[in-house]
Image (tube, rainbow, N blue to C red; front, side, top):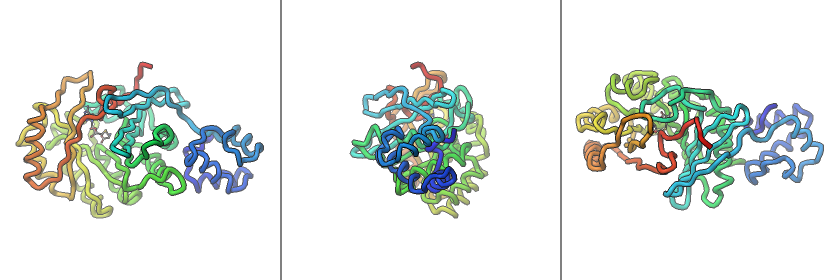
Length: 341
Ligand code: SAH
């Protein structure tokens, strides 16, 4: 059976018309779902019983549910979401930031890239999420956390978003719809390991959203060691990013996980500054979050600060991404597919 959350509003209107219903009914269901959080056709009181019955039998409303929520000491909340299709799990994280919140969503069940420091790829890739499975992670967050509006949305949960490109782009359109959840395109960030073709497509398809690129190393050799499924050389990545910048005119955010004794030296900072100065950009230095099956360690604060100060002196815009939610394994790289409930 098709599912409501896979459709944009125009697609839904078409589906309603094709199925012999008045087109405006699509908008009514849309409003109930996205504006009022109704999770059941029977709660949609202005729909005639006949329409509700038809929908019940021909269009499922949602395709996932929240199995469990864990709350961290810093108030971040991790939702374990179970997917109706095959009982697989993904995770999403709600991160409070003052009066607003950021939501971090997954795009794949597992991940094929298998970064050596990340838990999400430990069991490889099971499958792509559907558009609706991506949308519902945000919908659940907006419902549960209406006390603090979602301001930012980051596609930085499990999976490589650009390997599930079509479903990702459609989910962005649905989440951005001004008649629905209305999350600003400028408030969305997609993080990729660097799928070259999609970097350029992204500039064309969603030029107002932000692009973050996981760099992590300054030589191809080390990058390949840290990111075994790495799809390109650094040189090819930079040329795709320069094309992206030409088209979208948006600064790129580089991400760089600092690993003790591996990529945290000042020589590497010097090389890094040369690389990232080539295209208008900023960099997020990410503190390594412990994942139990590898031996990496985070550098101490002093090393992080020295690395960061070096880049700042070179005129680079640097932010340090401190741990959030790591006591419940909700921090970057800690989301995983296999769950003990
Ligand atoms: N697949 C996407 C999104 C990954 S999550 C990508 O590769 O860009 C967002 C960031 O967290 C990425 O830069 C990722 O490399 C980083 N990350 C992964 N594991 C981590 C860990 N254990 N500690 C800190 N950051 C991690």
